[in-house]
Length: 160
Image (cartoon, rainbow, N blue to C red; front, top):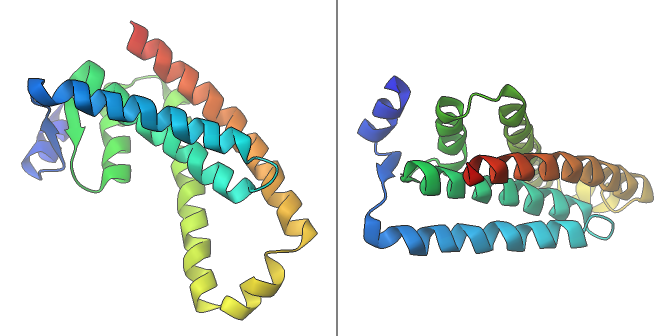
């Protein structure tokens, strides 16, 4: 728990007040479900958005777990801090690999957006191709399979 102590000192995590707990957990319960529905609904039509929403479903259920079971709130650098907290609390390496892979996919898409901003013309003419659309569709389907496995594992941890 030494790393958690550091995260507390750095104000990256805090304890959730009892009066805030229900509102906080309700938000993440609804948010992960909304993101999951959006991700599944858009796998074929908008696969990049499916990956983004699927990752947010994973991220939100992770924050729900951290809040519900450990009464911790992520305050800063939320994506990286969530993964750091999970590394300390969850000992199942397969589950950790899934959220870490989801975060990497999310970062890759964010980097593509940044690159697109820098190279608008190149991206404008090449990202709309059938080849790229099919590539992202395959990626989204594979990603959603992993996301479903991760979500189920987190649900089981919360049930215990």
